[in-house]
Length: 332
Image (cartoon, rainbow, N blue to C red; front, side):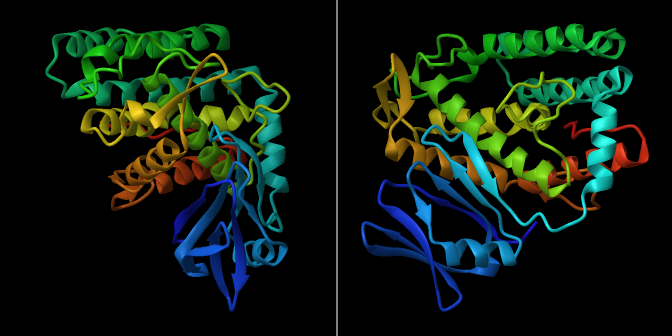
């Protein structure tokens, strides 16, 4: 993974071009940013933003992927250098995905990590409801290890999410009274907090897709999530341990600090969505969270959350190749 930072390009009349070895971002015919290649880890083109052929080729030559995202943040596609040898990893991946025992083992690791990271988000909260939720989540720990099937495991994952979202009303302390959370809703989100969560989850799922591809894995073939056409099931598997630790943490900070307010949302398609300025602010908040340090067992020193996602994808690939147990990041 390149050592630079992600470049998010938004706006209806924005595009990326190459000039004298530098990446230029233009918006409405005016240069707004100029970066050297070593400063960029990935380029994300949102909505109708585009890039020239020479710019894309130069990015790929330097191992920098181009992510094509819709206005909702969801990843529509990815352009990346796939010249590396991935056949051994892919064969091991497909064999494990066809093995019910191995799927259940890996699925348990995913749900256990999600549970640990959900509890970490609640551990230091002083509110009584948060403490009760923390304790109730603890009772699920033995059930994960004893889950006899993926169906039961998916039910436990759903219970973890339900308990977490039931605690959101006490976690959300936004100064804007219009930012009321009415329980998790999507397709479409029914209130601003849900619209922000859906957007951040979509962007983070794209990060996970890039990570599994970089590790040589097939993002469409998962272990916990059911495979469906157009669904990055493995990327969604990898997302689960990071969903609350990264996206929910970023959302709560943005809403509680007043960085994102009711004026950053708009009505659309029978629900609520982020407006253009809201999307830019949401991306900024998420990038800050992804850049914060976290301890990872694969390294001697702390890494940022984006690197942690890639490290988990890499150790999943290694475990599949070697036939060894697979673990996912759990905060303690």
